[in-house]
Amino acid sequence: MMKRLSILAILLGCVAALFAQGAERNLQKIYPVDSEVYEAISLLYVTQGLALPSTSGPWSGDELLGMLEKVDRSKLAQGAAAAYDFVQASLDEGHKPFKFDVSVAVEGYYHTDTANFKSESQWIRGFDERSPFLDIVLETWPAKNFYGYSSLGVQNSRYNGETAADGPTSTLWGANALTTNLPMVPPAIITDLDFSIPCRAFGSVGGKGWNLQVGRDKLSWGPGKSGNFVIGDHLLYHNVGKLATYGKNFKYSFTTSFFPHPQNYYPIINSGTGDFINGGNQDQVMRGLNMFIGHRLEWRLFKDKAGFALSEAIMYQSADNTLDLFILSPAAIFHNYYIRGNANSIISLEVDYTPIKGVNLYGQMAVDEFPLPGEPVPGADPLALPNGFGFMAGVKFSQPLGKGIAFGSVEWAKTDPFLYLRDNGDRDQDQDEYGINWIVAEREFANLAGVTYTEQFLGYQYGGDAIVYNVNGGYKVFGKWSAEGNFFYMLHGTHDKWTVWGAQGDAASDTQTTPTTTHVTENNGDLNYGLRNAVSKTLVLGVRGSYSLLKNLKAYGQLDYINIVNPGNISSNPAISDIQLTAGVKYTF
Image 1: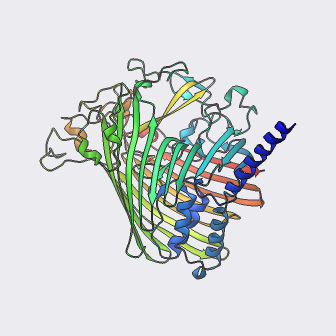
Image 2 (image 1 turned 120 degrees about the vertical axis):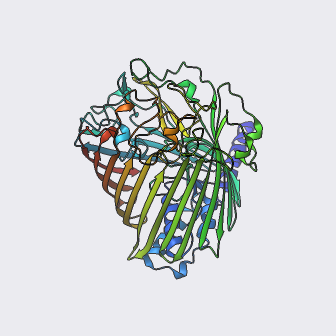
Image 3 (image 1 turned 90 degrees about the horizontal axis):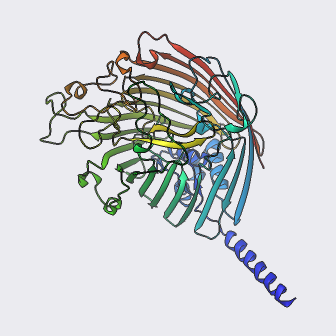
């Protein structure tokens, strides 16, 4: 009896100690790249005349709290003060040692063109933005400096079949005019359930001014609205290891992210028949190493009126899993490694400036390939390599209005035809040969489709050979309701993620400018690339909004009109258009 009482006393003591640890606010919680808390802080900064806060996310609670300390609440108008209070209340989480959240979302999707819009990539609100029907989230704060997160969703998978002509396909993205996120509700069946979860699960440890995160999460580097050049926020997840250290006016980030090596899914198509090749199955032995390694420095200058960020990164590939540890140096200059057979480097510069309260000017430039002094120059030397630049410029607006904040942005971006593309180290990429590209694969499993590899640009989601115009505006009362509209127009040339890099000596590829009307090299995803003879023109007009009906009940929706002229970059193809509607309600217990 005494033994049982002693054990009970010990257990009660451990529980009490655990709760005592959780009673102190834990600021190592990680807020995602689409966090409303970070969004509110960004608007508050521009409203108060400050440069943008750190644009490399996700962020810890400690970092966000440091950002908030620069905002003087006493000088804020009503709508901005309400946003400040929303942030303050959100950052007060972390008093308990653990927390369960269970949310149920019912979403419906409707679109008008079931003949031409049949893939997930053609939806403006894609797979990564759709809510699971049931989401079980566990957060843990086991000690002052530790945080854990895991999200288990019950949802339909991205694919539920495959064909030789199209590769992985799904009946849930276009073949039917009306679908839902409800498992086992027609046209969905039980085998459509997604078993590739979780997409967001990680551990976090940190203290005042630093944080280390390991696991799965989304990443984003940059202020862009239509995307960013080194790391965009459009990937489903990253297998990430990230260290961030930050102070009042400086931040340093060292980030790694791991992906399947291309040898596991190349070639994409059969060069003889043009049929797509199955990506594999779960018995496949994964081979090779493909990893992103990047470091980023961010400064705040001129009394917080200007921000400057310098990012350098490499995509490191090894077919035999070789990892040279020297590439992990956080203080190295990756460009000076001279390991072209294993790595492809990129550098990015970002600047933003808030000249007056409510207006922020920003820009970013990416450099993937350019001639150094003494090297062959594109257009002047037949042995030159094609340039790979990306440019972006924009302006953001933020103004308190009533109980909320009005916001807007205007953005322009241009990318070179061969940005993100490169050979495999031999300077002469051929058909069916993968390169060391800034293109990565999301590996998923579906019952009827098997293992699939969805390739995406790691940086700007529209890749190279594009000119993009984006205009956005809206109004938001944080924690209550929001409404916004968006105008998007893109000119995209003939190059895509499967374009074979312009080989050395291919003078025609060296001199191509954005947007291209001819595809002079081969293509790993399309044997009929020679038919491409026009610039595709995409127009998207969209509106979306949300409203909190009750404390834990939210209704939301999105409506988009899409029109594409010269689809597939072929002038003889008639223009196509679609109207896409998403409507949903979500309740969190």
